[in-house]
Amino acid sequence: MSAFAATFTDAVSLLVTFDHRVAEIVGLSLRVSGAAVVLGALIGLPLGACLAVARFPGKSVLTVLVNGLMGLPSVVVGVVVYLFLSRSGPLGEFGLLYTPPAMVVAQTLLVVPLMAAIARQVVDDAWQRYEEELRMLRFSWWRSVTTLLHDCRHSLLVALLAGLGRAMSEVGAVMIVGGNIDRATRVMTTAIALETSKGDLALAIALGIVLIFLILALNALAFGLRHWAIRRFG
Amino acid sequence: MHIDDAILPLRIRGLSYRPNGRAVLAGLELELGIEGITLVLGANGSGKTMLLRAICGLIEPSAGRIEWGPAGEGGRPRAGVMMLFQHPMMLRSSVLDNVALGLRPLGVPAPERRRRAMAMLERIGLADRAGDSARQLSGGEQQRLALARAWLTGPRLLLLDEPTASLDPSATAEVERIVREIRTDGTRIVMVTHNLGQATRLGDDVIFMAAGRVCEHTPVQRFFSRPQSEEARLFIQGELPWHMRF
Image 1 (cartoon, rainbow over the protein chains, first blue to last red):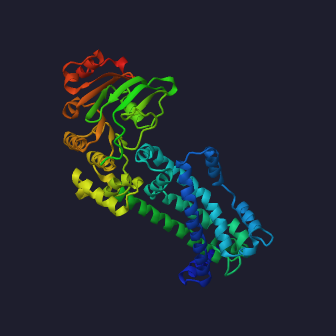
Image 2: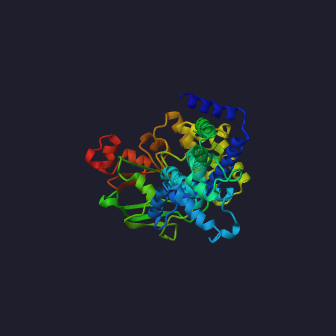
Image 3: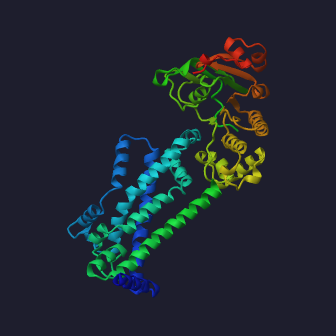
């Protein structure tokens, strides 16, 4: 019990003193996951909205596929991205393997299906309500997509949060394509895994506290934004 | 100014709609002239809303055709037909943006859209609410907003599906005032209602429907003073037998 308390005290000490290792790792995690969420949103939200609004052969199959890919194992994504970015891979010439951009690519691939599936459901609900009126106003399907994405923007915060949660808590893919290199590609989850295996539990716990705090803070922010939006826009 | 003047008169020939084999519209015949306000009356399930939806192309008829304009061209509805729903769409944006929405597909530049929308809001008495959220308007105000949005697109034919259902008398009167103004502006109006008083106040003629057919299409005064069909007579008396309803 005293060992646990001592470890926890050390972890809090690392946070209170703004330990530079912790700051570096947290900073890189936020940059990588933030970039992945932005890219994922740019791809996944319109993709999901298009799936809700557009009519085309194979729409049901694609919808099931996107929904199914929400559970894509991160290590599988890691291996696929690794194969593409390794020296002998089709994108090997760019030299991205074991760099933060490679981690962004892997996390983006993980969050796109999640965001697309949530966006499809949210936009589809709105489309069911507004389709006839938008057709009456002679909105094209693409104009309907952009209009509904804007109208559902507060509900789509959930998709962003889910994407961010998946990206920040993911460890398998970034470990494979990033290599967990100190001061280069080490993020919170890979650092926690490494430090735990080394027995440096204080750093692992400190990073775990930051990770949980960040996710809770972002959820609280989204909750507040959504309530403000409901009060403001109905 | 109207987008397309060549869609009236409108003739409906043998129009049927049978989803899952059930006749919602059953060989409907109808002719709509080039001006005025037509009120569509009938019991629930008589096919009133489906008639409007068929005219504006939201449902695919099982049989029959709609002929547009003096030349009687068939096919899908032309530009210039607009339908307003009982529960109109209110996007999560300002009243002004919701009204201006109708002009977006017409390629009107954003500043011009806002200018025209603001002028329209002044006409319908909602200018002071322009910056408010559309979803925070009362039911009557939302209907006025939806009317303004439709009006702004310059429809030649405007189809209204019970726009005053569940509105109080004051809100109903305001909607009726706007409907009259739209008609004065040259728009042909077809309006579904259950409010017989409204039919006498607003209508030039009445279409009475039962069981997916037009039982009567007659001037308002004649409809109420000398209904030609037994169904209409019973409806006016409020005694429509249950088997007439679907």
